[in-house]
Length: 400
Image (cartoon, rainbow, N blue to C red; front, side):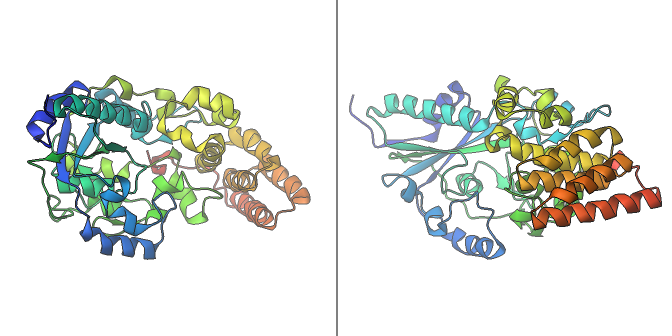
């Protein structure tokens, strides 16, 4: 068989369906010069630290694969009918947190990477030679949403998410860089919000008002980032977090374009109720090994148990339930400053005599000045709540 130097998207599609990729498109591997200005503005606003640090390397696919001639993009839907029901059905009993629907099932990095790799292996048989290729799922320099948009895979809304015409924004994005030309690859210009019209529900509904303009986000203010950041959660974001322990879905939930989307039918993304709504007390009692055993298949496991425990303490503070005082008080003796500080804030929100006693005892032995300040503020808050009689909280504003 004589090796080929070109292929068409029509030839690739059935192979993609065989490996579980229902929506694909393609673009060339030319640099994304249109990203230079947006990336510079993003740099000025402040990166989260999760992105590729060198912006110049993000605009050229050939930095990732020097031989690249084309890019196959894939949108993998993940929100099943059962997942959508889970998202609307927060348990009212017990001390339960909340996680974004994208982590309900298996870690998408593994699922999508495996499928794109399988597609590359099938393409080798069609092309008739070993391909030079690279798979990109969230961890490459590429700006996944812009790559997908340029290929015609979908369009970007004012919330910055890529929308599949069939599945809405509840899709995982991945790219397969190839050293073979795709004849009918597209090269579409950026056009954020082209199907949004005058609607700006996503921007107005954001709990932290993180959008600076359509499609542009102050990423460090996004609750999805806040739940993954290191250290202590800044005070302005603690109450907006509500009961969230991982991620935020608000800008997707309010979008009219997501109302009539087709559901995913993919077994790896079947929802796990214990992941969707983690038991906060159980989470706070877990070792890292127990955490990985319970949540290791989920995309929220990569940060480890301590980050989730910090978030759980903030969630308990927002719930203001007196039965949570003993477990939060236990964390005042943690070896990690951010956990002691988070526990103090939570106890200040809960209030009550037991919380006050625990805070006062902790203050007597605390050496870290930042944690001492959190404890002092928590004591003042708990005392004020007791005086005002404001220890009850309506659960309607907890962000589910």
